[in-house]
Amino acid sequence: MSAAQALRVPPVKQTGYDDLAGVFGGELFLPGSPGYDAARRIWNGAIDRRPACIARCSGVADVVETVRFARQCDLLVAVRSGGHGVGGHAVCDGGLVIDLSGMKGIRVDPAARTVRADAGVLWGELDRETQVHGLATVGGIVTHTGIAGLTLGGGLGWLMRKHGATVDNLLSADLVTADGEIVTVSEERNADLFWGIRGGGGNFGIATSFEYRLHPVGPLVLAGPIFHPLERAGEVLRFYREFAAAAPDELTTIFELSVAPALPSLPTELHGKPVVMVGACFAGRPQEGLEVVRPLKEFGNPIVDLLEPKPYLALQAMFDPSVPHGWHRYWKSVELPPLTDEAIDALVEHASAQTSPRSYCIVFQLGGALSRVAETDTAYGQRDVAYNVNINAVWTAEDGDGERHIAWARDFFDALEPHARGRVYVNFLGDEGPERVRAAYGAEKYDRLVELKRTYDPTNLFRLNQNIGP
Ligand SMILES: Cc1cc2nc3c(=O)[nH]c(=O)nc-3n(C[C@H](O)[C@H](O)[C@H](O)COP(=O)(O)OP(=O)(O)OC[C@H]3O[C@@H](n4cnc5c(N)ncnc54)[C@H](O)[C@@H]3O)c2cc1C
Image: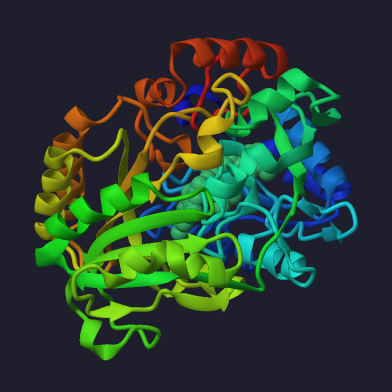
């Protein structure tokens, strides 16, 4: 039985959404009401679900009311913030979507170097406010991803090898639990729950705001991509793995195997070319970074080298045009130890066989500060992994042929899995079943998360997620 079938999904009238409207300060979208179709859409265009009601909350009181209402009426509940979860757990068929995307407050304390932000904030919005003060925390690499889902799963980004994962910079969060209570979690308050939300996703409550530690960053950073033709990827990646292994913490690198899109931000000689892109960000003074990245810039004969000083905000927006809302997506992800020749060959072979020019494979270099946090300190783990690989099959409704592109991603995954550690980053999981969720944490941590779930959400109200069942 699916999670959706397991809960009663009463028709709208029976649940009396009028009762919710009476105590709700935000907007309610019911089927047929203006804005309903826009409100049920998320980033992944392959997800097409029709909730009985979308409750766009205006503040914490709305979140409390909707949680209590959902419990009273025994409703299926989905929680949505940035809407980027690729599996589409942020929306459901029937049931109630508790939508935090309208909660946008941000307050920076430049003296304390902290920021508090509401759960509906996107990374581009947060970076913009913190960069006014020359500060930033570790956030995602696309501006329109939500801070909420990304933080609750761990959080990887361009600053991570210097400053750790997003959760390593989380100081506190406010949560509405399954019984409608508001709690603050931090090292000092409800420390067990604070441990769990730093990687355990939305299993234990609805986060309404987050407080992060900030670091001096930019406004200019030495960053950007270097492109080589895909046919030279084997050679480029063999050089790259030695370079990356010796890189200081200040340097975070990401490489991608793709067909370069015809974007105005890319030189025309790249458009439509299969490429290997090696991107880097030096989280320090650009002048000092130049020495560090010199070997990368001098290796081979790149088609284009855009690794140069640029505003941190421009770096954060770099990938935006190639990941627009509405395209159809299917992801498979693995984590790799240091790259072997065989793993490189598998990456190159399968990337070269991609069935859609929109598809790509993106690989994050981990290590550095990430690896110096003890494995048991946060629910987010895999501290000893070297690389995180995300295989993205991408097509549009007009392109069609989704099954073929999905099969490509699965074959790619099957080829890499023998080289992997059997673990996966929870934020890159689609709808892949309980074994993959368990794999994201490992048995010991998973058991600890189950104990927390039993304490804070014994009826599994929050089940549309990478679910840790009570
Ligand atoms: C284009 C793109 C770029 C990405 N880049 C990165 C990256 O650089 N680094 C990285 O680490 N990850 C990245 N990701 C993955 C990202 O971390 C996850 O998709 C994450 O779930 C997105 O969060 P969201 O709030 O936008 O999504 P949503 O779909 O709104 O949320 C995903 C899930 O999180 C839970 N959730 C959301 N909000 C709350 C809340 N307030 N309280 C409790 N539970 C909640 C729910 O279970 C929900 O189903 C990227 C994803 C995309 C699509």
